[in-house]
Length: 83
Image 1 (tube, rainbow, N blue to C red):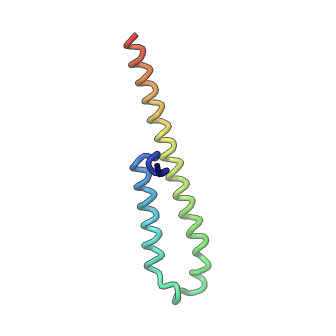
Image 2: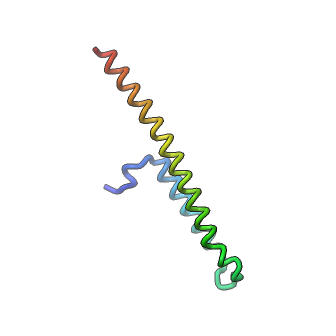
């Protein structure tokens, strides 16, 4: 079983989309003709992308936690109703 099988499909798709966007942005650069000043910006750009990904993961974790809390509440209510 892959780790992606344990994650919500929407989250996996968002990560894939972000990776594709990064790949497309890098592919659109002609690095051999890129001025040194722009090359020096690459680590900063990657750090910004990492922050965006971390923020997206945190938001998804929060949403997942809220969904799990709601499901737990519904299960508890269903169990109480059965008794």
